[in-house]
Length: 269
Ligand code: AMP
Ligand code: MG
Image 1 (cartoon, rainbow, N blue to C red):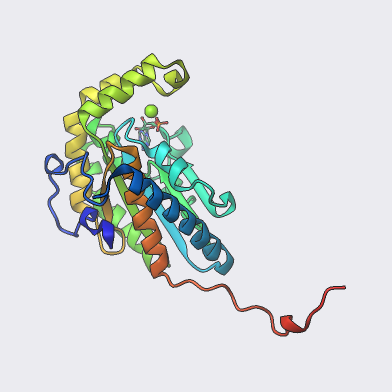
Image 2: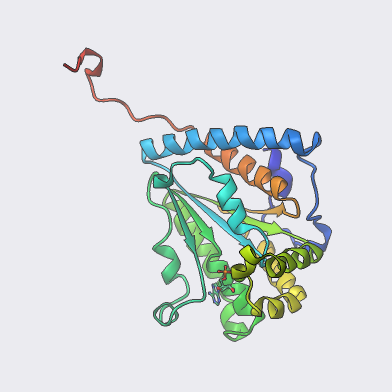
């Protein structure tokens, strides 16, 4: 796989400072050439998703995590451009409601996992329960520290029952976040995306990096791998995600279902 270099081998200790958020290794011919590839991959994704929906056999779960402004929304918009919305279910996970908090943290997640024929996209996910929750001490360390194991077991269950899982950490630099947050303040159309609380989160950048490193080091498995996506350049982010997604779907070797017998003899009058 072309994007193999971004896949985290199980058991790797990830040090995010050694991953370049501006890496362009997969696009040696530059941005314009990459844009063509992105278009082709997007078209192929559209075909593969149609096939997946028609066959109604495979389930794909795509998890997106990132710091604020990391580009989760943009990636969803661009990667799935033109793809039939009927077969793609996007779920955004916000601060849990009272009802959700009254259950275990995976309760709200399981309901949104993909059915046969579907691609489910998680904009944030159960990983928030070892990211924001860990960074803000929303539960004690003995509680969040057990969750990596739960999460691995949960994802193993999904994989055993036929779900293909792909997880993407969109990696941006602290400087890029600064520029993107400033743009949300300066551009009136983007004001809605900005909350003053985002600044308090930014101040915890190093704590978040530590929490992400734990996630990437402990929950990348063969059946549910993490990819660290260099995301300073939006086009490169989209290219990497599309490469992984399309290649993974190609590997499923999907076929249209067998037509009913005798179709060739039917003439509609
Ligand atoms: P946004 O993605 O900008 O709409 O923000 C969603 C917010 O919900 C983020 O600040 C997340 O950190 C927060 N959030 C998501 N899941 C959880 C969770 N399990 N516990 C606490 N906060 C969460
Ligand atoms: Mg936000």
